[in-house]
Length: 232
Image (cartoon, rainbow, N blue to C red; front, side, top):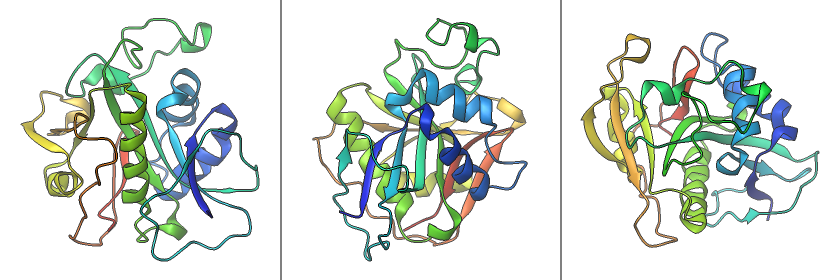
């Protein structure tokens, strides 16, 4: 199949950074060290990419069952989208989950007060980015479907949680997320809303179809963002 997903790793740093910086204006793109290098180093197992094989054309329509491959793939394959996350012991995403330890390179697998917590059962989804040339094709929904099914298979979490703006709550509800109201988080002075996708539903269940607006809405505040919204 021309489209496939796989776990990202630090060797994907430059490709992930390219997608990130192309998908967002400079003020909104995730920083190299914080969101890309840090998270691909300490928790690559919960970061995935959607790839197009070298020389292949994007299929239309996007297939529902995109394979997840475990093996290394060609460096010539194109990264179209990525999901980058951490883990937390909190159920909703808190301010400390969005931060990262400034000295993490001294001990990447160490325990810190902020950032990734290996004991967490909540996936804090920080970045969903789709390369601009491939937006509006349904790839955001496609990679989220793979991500949810992969997380269920690994039994590595109980939920996937996000923070988002009020106007984007309906989008996530259509993807299967539950809305828990306004967040206690005051990160960057924004009035956030808490949402979670509960991972107790049967493996392989479909992410509900999104039938809303096709507008592309980038989301970011001080380098914390969740990518491209409003895709069908």
